[in-house]
Amino acid sequence: MSAGAPPPPARSRYLDGGLLAAGVVLFAALLLQFGLDTVAAHLAAIGFGFVLVVAQELLAYGANTVGWWTAFRKPRPPLPPWRLLEARIVGDAFNYLTPTAGLGGELVRARCLRDLAPAMDLAASVSVAKLTQLAGQIAFLAAGLLLVLPTVSLPPPWRLAAGAGLAAALALVIILVVLQRRGLFAPLLRFTRRLGFVREHHGIAEFLARLDVEIAAFHRDEGRGLAASAAAFALGWALGLVEVALLLWLLDVEVTLARVVTIEVLAVAFDSVLFFVPAKAGTQEAGKVLIFGALGLDPALGLAFGIARRVREMSWAGIGMLLWWRRQAALSGR
Image 1 (spheres, helix red, strand yellow):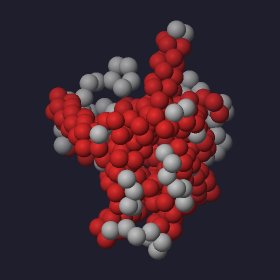
Image 2 (tube, rainbow, N blue to C red; image 1 turned 180 degrees about the vertical axis):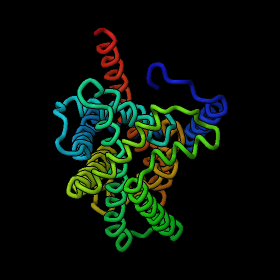
Image 3 (tube, rainbow, N blue to C red; image 1 turned 180 degrees about the horizontal axis):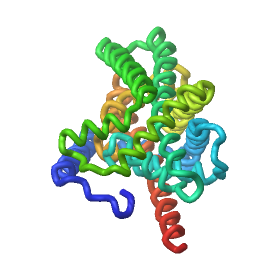
């Protein structure tokens, strides 16, 4: 949460706390079911491989940073690549640690670069990038399902859920494209104002109206930029396959293309459905247990896989928060 931001409503805090507690209980139940010694032995097999698991995420961060960069309207502001990468890491840390439907991190990204680019350019870029990242995710899932479904034996409910989820996500992208072209934020502000959630504030209304114009202009003039941004984000999603292959190898599980793609596609879909759980508590591990079981693999290995992925996620979340605190200290020291 940014400095000076209002605290979340008590009802939201209670809900988040309840979800977090339920996730911790679920995680503990999984450890008891499969045995702490068994899971610990699997994790010990990874050993110093955890360094590689954490480090390989830089590949995805690089692709996602390019995806964000191409979401700026030309002429793009002169932003140093390392500052873009830093803001990307910080924003992902906030999205991971806070249940904001992946929106809180976008505000933080813009805040990280407020000394380098106009607020309007930053707000428009993160809005467009949010859309193209979702489009890239759908492209990855669609390609993965086309490869997986004909070759991998999955239970019918899994196939149905995957197809339905992909269709729903595609519909969401189409709706967002239409809304961004017509104007999304100013009408949303008027709607929330009628409901009494937002007080009258002329400055915000004017800014959001200009933001809608800027985003619509990007859609109109930057067709190639939209496609390039979505492609870069799709590559970022696809680079998750590197982590899956690496972890399977470290856990001494046979690595095949179909298996790697299936695990990552189902994991991405599972995490997307349960985005509202703080830090994916419990759901990260439970999802991998279900996926490994559906593929006929040892579910205990799935639990170890999920824990290893959490280690990577928490490592980068910690790095992101350290970068955020350093940036805030630098800005306040001016």
